[in-house]
Length: 157
Image 1 (cartoon, helix red, strand yellow):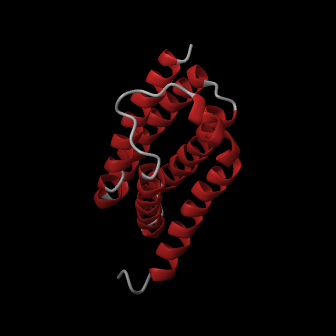
Image 2 (tube, rainbow, N blue to C red):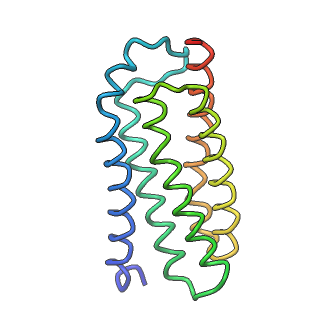
């Protein structure tokens, strides 16, 4: 089945990775400014972030492809809408956090992302359980990112 639908999987992974890459492109100047910010003790080395996000975007793309390939239904449509919504919120978080250094607002925005991810996982689970399970690392990483974001805000008020 995967072989038959490889183009769909590749398209979704590439589109999702492109959103992440575009967000990274727009925030590259803000990341340099971030060097002067006080960071929490559990902040991973810089190299960790592009590796983790590349893997997470790939998992997101695979999950979305599985949902796209599921039989048409209201829940499938809802799942894809939630996918697009959370990906959009994800895209803008980096701009608010790095470029604007609006750490408090970014934390609230991240809470919105976290809620959307939960809703997406729930909706995906109604359509395709493996697609939902593939989103768990994303939810866990965004939870950790929430801690980092909150601590950066707290340390730099």
